[in-house]
Image 1: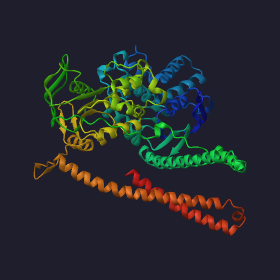
Image 2 (image 1 turned 180 degrees about the vertical axis):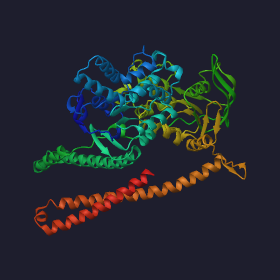
Image 3 (image 1 turned 90 degrees about the vertical axis):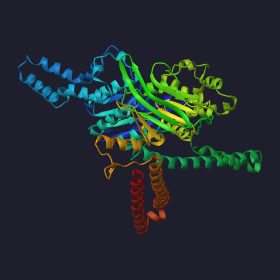
Image 4 (image 1 turned 120 degrees about the vertical axis):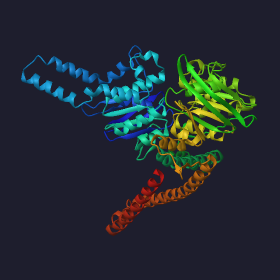
Length: 621
């Protein structure tokens, strides 16, 4: 149990009397704007320091915590790190061995209890569990005996995630567990969490992952926790309705403040109005003004219009890439047309990033096959591994130096969208973290016009609000896009076509949902045939049919959702008014009136529950 945790940095109170309870049934997503304190709260629950408050837990409760700030002993092998998850059981085994030579009743009882604990744990199955977990998270068996120094920081995170899962704790605290996981590894983690018998509290910027892994959402807002008994997508809908009310209240407060100040400025010096002016000022002091964090204010950003180019933007034929004797991929043939948005997918190690480096112009010689750009094509390439020199001293100066004069006015908006707010814009570029550096490289693509964007994992270091801003910009982008992403929501909303790199590369003439359906059919042998001939549905037909159906369904759902929200709002108002009547002396002193009002409250509550139930069913489908 977390009770009244407080933490402040200077005058800013990050956590203000935060309380929450976790148990073995918890499946909670911790949400909130960037900088709200989500990671800090997880760290405190895991044993970090707070200014005040307390963390209480039942005896022998094991908390397993995965932090974003992962430090690993690079001298360990991958297998040694994974095996360290069983350290507490090795200690019990040693204690049991120490009792072997003792024959007294107390020693025999202790040994028996230790033996029973080990038998009922995963200790004697650890080799198989380690193997399955490491393979599930994308490692290969030849990697097991390699030192961690041979792996990148992204693979260090996977290794630590494997250790946390293997600990088999009672409560899991996971900070961005799906970051750096490919689609296959993310699916493995989701399946593992479904089978896990303990409680989970997680922070993630992957909307699809949160929807599938959590059943409730805990929001950190202005330093306090609010619970929503629904998954993340439904939380967003509820929160949006609440935010709209807060924005309306903020506008009303601002209007009232202006009225009061105008009155005071106009009449404050007049003796006959002085008392009224002071009364107005006292009213102003009592107003609890709504404060909305800047991160909750939606930002719209757009890429510059792409320069003119031909209809054929990119053509490659029998493209192949090898590292020494190891072939990464071969036989890749693709024609990318003007305005097409193509996602590149495939298992880890298939060469997705290598392909994008070639297309982006960062690997111009070390490949085989044919690659040609169309007439007038200008390529913009992003990868967080790009070693690009910076020309400005601070973040803002870097953008000012790179931007055309016409773009200068938009820089603050761009910086805010990519999580550089307030004093962050004055950070020295040399002191940026890896994630901040990646965000700066990404937003520089908004400063120059390109007609071919090549993006390798552009969402890795963005929160959900920043992802939405980028997604909207890419949906509206008129050029050609090739991208790699492990974010299923991003793939579903953006990809028009899928290029799968595997032992046999294949192009799918439809979006990500269509791709998943086809892969399922291929995997389970369910090819569609009509009169013994393969049924061919063109991409345009598919999109028209599916688009028409989805549009009709979405309009119907939106209309009913709006009706229900208005109905819920009216019923809640009625209920509040009836409950206020019960506080009046002339009512609560009259038994008949109390009974009448209570019956009305019961009826309104019943209708409210029914409306909420229908609304949740509607938004869950």
